[in-house]
Length: 467
Image 1 (cartoon, one colour):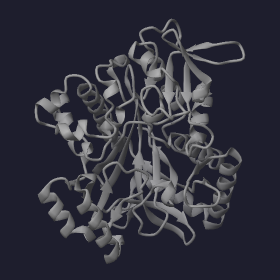
Image 2 (cartoon, helix red, strand yellow; image 1 turned 180 degrees about the horizontal axis):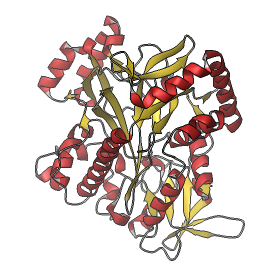
Image 3 (cartoon, helix red, strand yellow; image 1 turned 90 degrees about the vertical axis):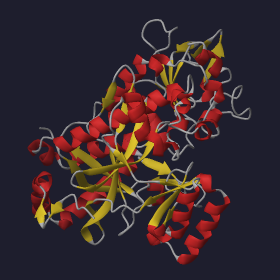
């Protein structure tokens, strides 16, 4: 396990000032500050929801006040790798809904695309503004050594967590202003402006003047509603539900007290199936009837585009390095985790024989649910999971259990290393933008590799040190 704070018994350079500060502060004050942070999270209302477990679904996300630090050179590598990946994924999306050159070339199997539940035939042939389908790409990155980074998965639909990135920084600056006055830490507060600039840049062909932008939410019961309202507020745009919008004469309008207002760009935070009951699920009450017809005709832009989910399937993930080579003519800057595809007979045989050593994931799974962490599972759990794999091998992939890097974390027993991952948020429009920061998620349980908040994980502020 690579400890990001220490190497060979010595504190690594980016953490030296932080370690000096922690030593001078002491555990009692840190414990007090942790309580203050929790109080702030409660007052502000920074929560997420977990349904199906009984009790109050609203949860306060655990916040760890010891930041994670990247040097400027480390960030440069991550930035180049994430932008490269976002560019390749968007090119792939445009390709599979048009000429399918990558499939004709035999690089990606046709079945993985056309039989994918996230592939939307209704989108075939549509030209979204600037040929961009996934406008916000969340790339989950893990570290296993000083210079070794791997991509765990890509999130091309509606990656969540950016509000935590912003609020984590706000709370850290409020509680520890002396640290920010001493250290040169790259700011992250430009993200809402960069998001707004990206959304404006994808205004549709029929837009006249300054585009009118809205954030479309399923409503207050959604697990990420706090983030929806937070981003709308930060950008200064309206937060709407499906019932607030309607279609008339080939355009989308918003109901207001001043009368209908034209809508040009919709940042949607609802799933494809619910966007338009006339095109997708007819029983949806969350979407806007007729929205897809307006989208096809260039009357409105949708961020991210319907059908973008086919690019973040965990089986498609295994082909992203090939996409980079095929479309960009480059070698991947950030590597994938080695992956076995259970749909292949040889891979399936290996996975079933080595199940206690592997991490197995559902191809369409998310949130840390439905996965098996072999080293942390019993023989009975492995045997039960093996039967699931045998029943539908194509629904699963497997990966080695990586020794994820660990960062100092303030837990009940004091400061101890805990495993972390990282999700930067890449904006794609007229340009590709990447805020110098991201969401660091931390597995608070000792030895755990599961960082998802719904599975007991927490979050940290992420510092990118300026040159």
